[in-house]
Image (cartoon, rainbow, N blue to C red; front, side, top):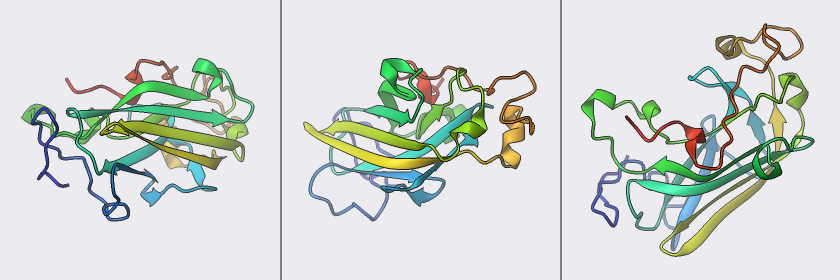
Length: 203
């Protein structure tokens, strides 16, 4: 995790420009990863139970090739799922800005990166009563940011996978047709437009 560069405010950067695929790009670049693999056109976006106890789709951005303005980079993130327009602006999930940490964690009492937003955690909203009904649906993911005055965007057509696994029990899932024991998805709204969807920016 490279720490040899700084932002315009002099912040050391620990979560920035750390992969090889686009490292030689001329100008700002962005890569997206899902469950440890590069997320590409036509790929599968899998529903999982997050550590916070909510169902979500998690995508990890890796970026570089520019000088950040500070410890966080502001993203626009939109996930569209066929038949689901209950979220902000008619999306399944939408956040602007969605702040991603690229600086270093300086508080020794909170040195676990999970306390900070280093990935897009696109939570399932309460209106989705049947998780299993999401399985196989077409989806479109849009992610964008501006670096050194240049806009960088990725748009991917994907397929949703909503297949229960052992981790779902942490979110309260039981084999009752995709609902929990209280008849809900167990998630939270989590789709505001102020960037609070991806956790906190630290204590």
